[in-house]
Amino acid sequence: MESQNNRQGDMDGHLKTWKPPFDDNAFAEAKAKVMSRISEQEDSPQLGGEKKYTWLKRAAVILVIFGASIALYLSGNVVLENQTSENTRFILPDKSEVILTKNSKLEYNKYQWLWNRSIDFTGEGYFNVYEGNEFTIHLPEGKVSVLGTTFTIWANDNDWLVHCSSGKVSVQNKVDTIVLNQFEFTQVTNGRLAPKMIYEKPDFIAPRNSTILSFESVPVGIVLKELEKALGIKVKNDLPTNLIYTGILDISDVNTCFEVFCKPFGAAFDRNTDGMVSIYLQ
Amino acid sequence: MYYSNVRNFLYYKTSQVELSEDVAQDAFVKLWETRDKIDKSSIKAYLFTIANNLMINKLKRRQLKYRFLKLQEDKKDIETPQYLMEMEEFDERLQNAIAKLPDGAREVFLMNRIDDLKYREIAEMLGLSMKAVEKRMSRALAILRQEIEGKF
Image (cartoon, rainbow over all chains, first blue to last red; front, side):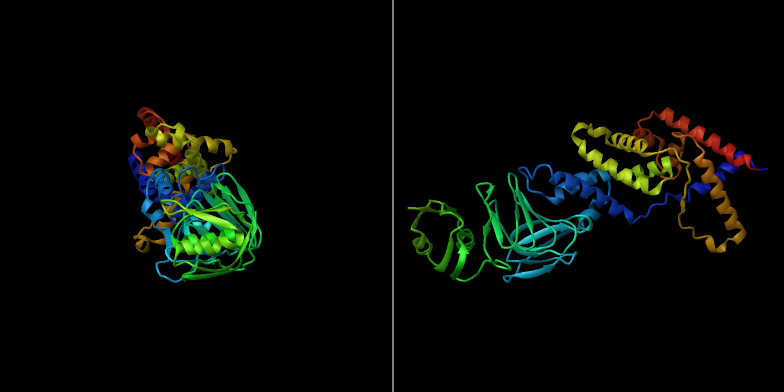
């Protein structure tokens, strides 16, 4: 007959070899699921607040709680940046495509991507979103969400622009939400989303690199955005944004450029000391 | 690694694999939701309390049936089939005996023996005194000894 100690020795020996039936690989998935659920909560009630949505900050805080593998999760962070001078196409893990202009960039986490297609974006890009879960693009102080569709975004600062080329796009900022259908666009001015306007371009509205820019029936809002980008200055526009412009503008001289632009509308412009151009009706 | 500790604790409590994963994740989400209200020094205890409470709400009284896995043993090839079979039988008996341990004692015992958590750590996580943890451990060992020996 065996002694108590021996029996307990057997027991401890056995216990040392046991582990609970959980898959080690499931660990990263579990974390991604929790991150995803927390992100959904953060996004839906109110938007952004003053802080730009940043992956690293949120990931770091939550992963301190998880207690380990911050490096593993952060290693899932992907940055796509176009450092060439040509528009470049990138393909995302869900087969969505994005064309980025020079210096534009987007960021996403590949673990979270499985449950929640969510990216941070700055610059100009054209998105062709593969059908699937809601696809969300976070901009300064706002977001764009789509299910499967194509659209253009210009987002360098707090005055951004979104144009839908096919399907439907939901655009939100702190105050307004607008759903764009094909060929409709909106832009942020003074913190509000402008009422929908129409521009029937079925593909990417890309900023152009030449000194001579030609426009054919292009809404004034888009013309001015392109001038802002080309000239590197801010434009304040008091003209109704549903006006259409057709013409050729030479951007080598700012003053001439705006003189020519304003003429058809009977408008005039001023320049501030910091270079900003203000256009107004006379 | 708090996540696996919480998830395993729930498994020891319920022997339910998927439920343990789900509720563990729920607990982290709930922790995030209420993060402004908690004292940072007791996050661990708070997390376990949330997990425990969430599980109590979900759980219907069900019989416990554990399915522990074996870690890799390199001696496998030199043992006889007879020996291996006896080892498996003992594992089976031990799992059944553990399932009979009372709530409270069972989780503490498994957290100590399988997750290798020290009494002090378990006390902190479950909000117990050291003495309470020791008491539960001796209770578990006494019952297991009886269960295992009683078969012989």
